[in-house]
Image (cartoon, rainbow, N blue to C red; front, side, top):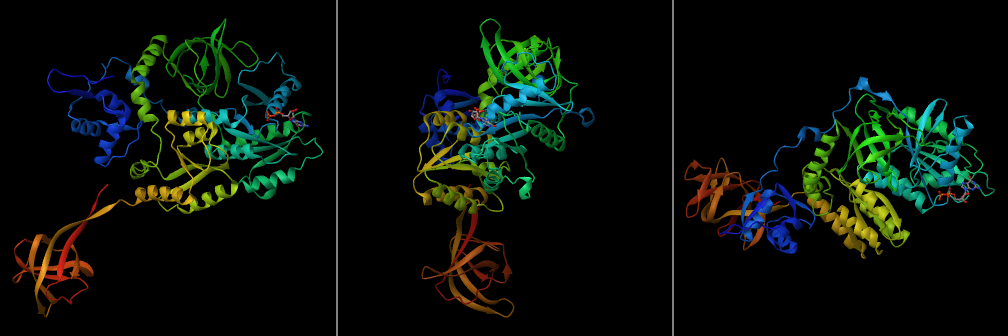
Length: 592
Ligand code: GDP
């Protein structure tokens, strides 16, 4: 989009909000110039950050533009349909199966465990059928269904979360009994903790001679996962995925945790769902596996997924069986979308296909505005605003460092920076370069990334830029800490500047039986006010600070005295005035 020049002055029409970059584009000015201008007005903004109309108008005026508000888009859209979904009445909520994701270090047996669990339904006498990988499946234990997300690992888990989809109810952390806690185990733990999802530990490969479950439990404790044997509340289940041992215990544990979590949803409403995975099938068109989260999805329903509309033309379960409807926590394969959505996209059922198309159209047109407001991500420059708006109580940090020693040292020092107002929370500290998964974690948790003496993977860098996640690189610990400390100081301690209101010179000292010593003064400049803060200066040196307790013109108490007049001044906690002393009147003003 470009500036819209009028015949005379250069005029630009601005929306209620736009990014620095977009403003630059509209004005035909480099974004750096815009950032500089903003700084002169005390506004720190990054290139992809959104600024409001007023701020944009000030900068545009500075640059010689006339500014007007952009006409709103014609209001023919069914605006009401984009409103937030109504919350469900408590009475409408029914229990629903838990949705489980399996995470853990590579080769610890995630895929094998998912296979072993899937096999239980054949063992349980359910129709086996040919199961194809569709991204999620369900099994039953003692009549209770459990849904498993069939894409193991925290990358998928956190990618969903980064897109705003909370698909998982319970995380199963797989740790190989012979190998113990490894770097990706720690990463998975931190991703799960950041998501606030309950965890169950599956200690796998128990069949191996080198299996040492106690060592695993001990190592987990070091990473804040305390299993029951060690006095914590995390269930740990020994299993062997390849031998199929302990699988039933694991399912039982999942049902136990699910029971405590009291998972419910209202099945009697139009469905909302989340995309688990999707692909383009050469003969059948876009195929998406959806996980129904609320309501019931039915054949023929009109759908909106992001900017894609569609209709449930056909629906299948994970065994390829045709379905007519699917309730909460059920994974279904759906045909009939117009394009391939992305994993983590949210799906809504709307009245009909016409409405679906209207909504998609509206979303396309308002995409930019929505992206700017929805994806405004925390960064050190804007922390203060977030905090003062009451939006942020924690500074979430993902920390990557070259060696373990520095990661631990920095983590400790950062945590010390917490105050009662703002908590510094390091949700993941590890060695190695900054990866995609780190960026996703920071994105999903609205945090920043600190890289100490380590590089940033190119793909992670790209991802961070796209998502607006801040990555700060340092090679000196002290500088890293100072930056964070400064950002925090800006957060809870507004900056005050001293503003001098005037000066009075002491010409004579009087004694009053009632007030004690009174400084007889001449107002050299400014205006003196009673109650003001003052400091007494002798030969330029500060002698005392206090408050102006009394201000007199002759015998009368007055509220203020102007330049060129004489007056009597009484300062709290000080009375040793001498001729020639200067009393400075000042106040503190908030500058940010
Ligand atoms: P993933 O990378 O976590 O998905 O791990 P996989 O499921 O691919 O398993 C990695 C390797 O460990 C494979 O060779 C599996 O056969 C083996 N494995 C998995 N579970 C077990 C187990 O319970 N016992 C033994 N002995 N090997 C296992």
